[in-house]
Length: 232
Image (cartoon, helix red, strand yellow):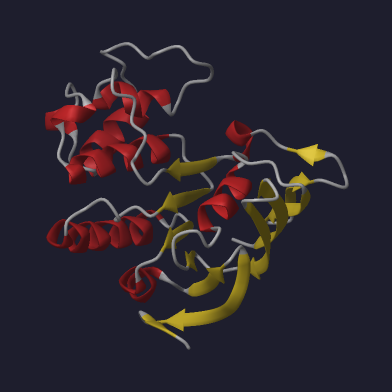
């Protein structure tokens, strides 16, 4: 997948101003945006997803223009065909796992039925070992189960890519290691491109084909990473 991102955004006021000014191109399957909290990683990911409207710049994916401020192009988030997994997973607390997955297949705000069914729902319930929890609500799940449910919801609509916002930050060490391995296997198995943001060097080592190092709303460095080892 070819990424061409150049976005600018000013947030806050004169007393507390943050300027995002990020530009990069990449054609790898696993791209990692790496940097400390407050670096602008989440803002960049939201600009790619269509959840944040930049003040300037463009977002192009495989030569398709999703945003171009000068050209007046701003494709709605749902039409960009990305699967977005938020840091805290953002599962709907009043919906079961089955309904949360089904929600990713629906347009509008209508809640899916408790018995929602379909090939995509069944596929991801089985693939991510969620069938025993299909009727459970998010507050009845472990951290790992919630992450799998969020991934299933994102993958059910067959997205062109997964956008992952600090997907392991809320997990304990042992669970983090296990779910890293599961996500890496899942990505390789289904060949779905990912853009993952993190402040953890271990995520870079495990996932990055290429790493975009960020801080202060800017790109500091871009490095190719092969065989699980990031270049300096």
